[in-house]
Image 1 (tube, one colour):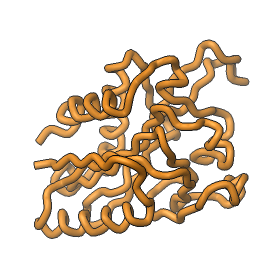
Image 2 (image 1 turned 180 degrees about the vertical axis):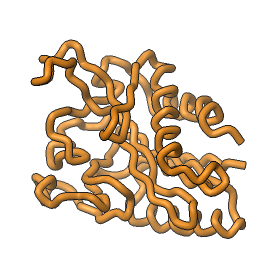
Image 3 (image 1 turned 120 degrees about the vertical axis):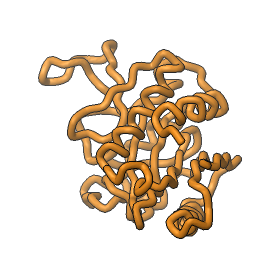
Image 4 (image 1 turned 90 degrees about the horizontal axis):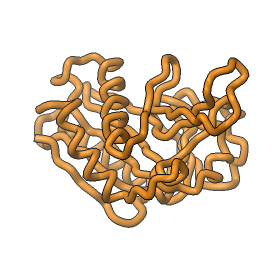
Length: 216
């Protein structure tokens, strides 16, 4: 069984990490079910295990939290759906790369419910959307913006941390960092794409598509 939990309001980041670590340990011990936790954070930056200090361009703007998840700097804040994924990867194939790709595929299937074409990119973890209305990239390809970030950690083959999908965050808040260390692409959101999607709409789509990518 996978439990689903939705927290209203804004959840303190340190509190969330402590609760995730406790639940992940319980899952590993067989004393708790797997958990998908949906929430929002107050504005903050997190530094993953690969973060470069030079990518924190405005260190005094929001609180900065060191994180043990993979990846570099990310932003969390109101209007962004954070999805903490506590799943037993040991019982789901023990293939970390395939697990991350399944997370990406889950996000892509969810976005498709809103007629958004999300795509994976080799070497760029997360989900991307093409922006034909923007100037072409230097290589002549269509511009791309990131709509969802993914960063996980495993302990005893149980995942925690997870995904963030931009619904309607203040996109200017991303300007205090180089998101995920990538300078040549921007960030977008569902509302920025002209789609008046609510957090409740997204939550329904996430749950509907979860079983397609992570069958029981």
